[in-house]
Length: 72
Image (cartoon, rainbow, N blue to C red; front, side):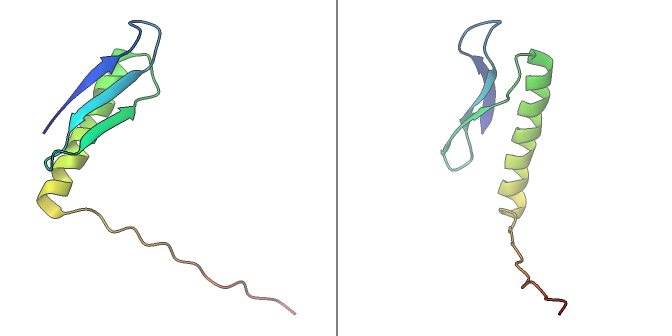
């Protein structure tokens, strides 16, 4: 699992995080920044998240919907 930074138009477009995860799934995400230092920090953070998923599994996401209570 190795992610790298890629920029379509050097100096003008946003940095893209590219690579594959541990299962071979392609990762292709915009960093939404043209600053390479910021993009590198985001790449490291994303790589860390992927590593945690490998070790501990994907984090469960639960959405709780509560019914509206009327005050009549």
